[in-house]
Image 1 (cartoon, rainbow, N blue to C red):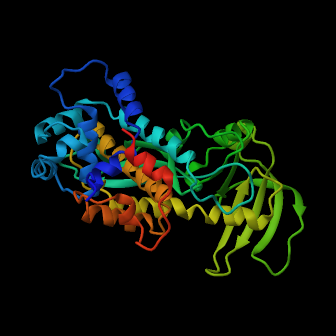
Image 2 (tube, one colour):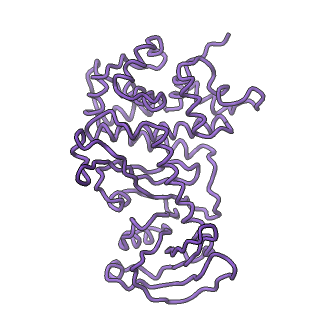
Length: 385
């Protein structure tokens, strides 16, 4: 019978180990030889997410019951005190950089593309509060008797994977974080009214980026021109407008497009703004409707990975845990693509959870016996060091 490493070990081989170690040396510099390595910390946190472990002690116990697997995983013995110390002291920027590295790998995979015809990438921007205990996390105070941190995400609609991410204290505004993201030229950004800073809209336009958002109810403007509207559809009006409010005038924003729309399914009325004048008005409405994907992403990651119950007390420990969760999501997307599995991300995660230390080929786990042979790319990835 052929020898196979565990499903967890095969899953972790999707991480480019050489680049991982280079990143660790660049981020952490020289460390004591007996200190918990970055790879051991990462593996333990991945186990916490996939295995749904509830605490540091739970992670320690899970690894202690599999002593023979530490060699195949390439990790040290992991105690809860050493893991807690690493989470508190080793900077979370490392896992953020690893997240961007894995996103670049996803870029070179054949992930499903968005359904729109424009060439630029489509990104949805949003932030989501994640509640914490006020007694344990005083730094996360956002209101009387309420504490939370905020996860900010830019979702790439090619594959519906996170492309940009940041973890902040709960009171940090979405605008403050969005200004740090650097999008490829020609990209299309869709965001809600929480990103309503006109100066930022002007900066995006000057950088060759397109954006779609909703208008505020008190927005002041004057109509420059009207464009024809197809009768019988959801589009009520299509206008070029000039914003006349003090903040808009100060920002120097050029005339933009205003699309008024009524959804036939919900009978709700919407007003969209965009700096793109060539799209059909219905396309503008459809782009904003696609923003719901980022809401679904937040819902999925909260329900399926361990970010609502944190295992560290500092914002650094919380950020480390969250960025590892995002790395796990990207690895699941890579695994789905490379295996050509018809299963969804959640189904793949469930199979990994129930077969974490099973010794069987992971491509066989994800594909029925009668299916076509697995993609050579997966076999190459899983054999790579």
